[in-house]
Image 1 (tube, rainbow, N blue to C red):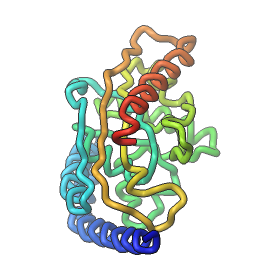
Image 2: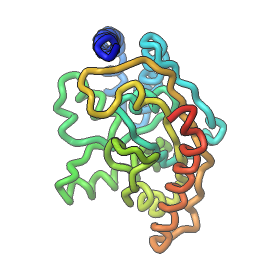
Image 3: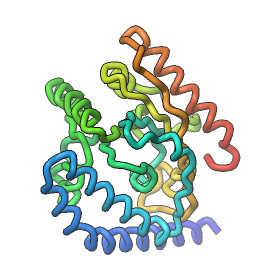
Image 4: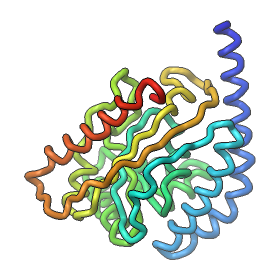
Length: 251
């Protein structure tokens, strides 16, 4: 029956791609138009459209998103949202679930991608990780995003987690940003996206419901650079324990 599963997974991946392209073509013009607005209005309207898009797209591909913890968001407070990263499906999931405008960190070369370049320029802070000046500019831009009242979404594991552990070790960036800006960190945990797109498989996907849980914010107003490691460890432990608690049902 393995051959049948592989066949169905590739047929489903084809279907999901076709639906994505069709819905993207519908959304492309309005998203491009709002991208021309001055910031931060451009990102607010842009993400409103993106959220509406994902609220249509995800049910159409039979991957409903179930969200818990929205009550932790204060509408007057920008957060540094830190999230686990298991597959490419994490991006549409967070777009669906985050209840306000947000930007993420993305590779600078993505701005050259046909069509997607527009989306990345507006919806992301772009960085060349190999260029110290680019990294410095990206930090300044992320601080500006937060000062505009827009959330920053960061994946502290850096790359997708292809291990058997709930999380990979965290990089310092999100936590340094939180300490320097005194903005709260809001942990988020996604379940089941790895079941949709398993690591190591090419053009292979299977439908599955997705769960995303937002956890209690972590205050950073009194922290200094000396608290970096303890902050990172605290958030890591919180997310690890939450994943383990729900592992059997959803991981």
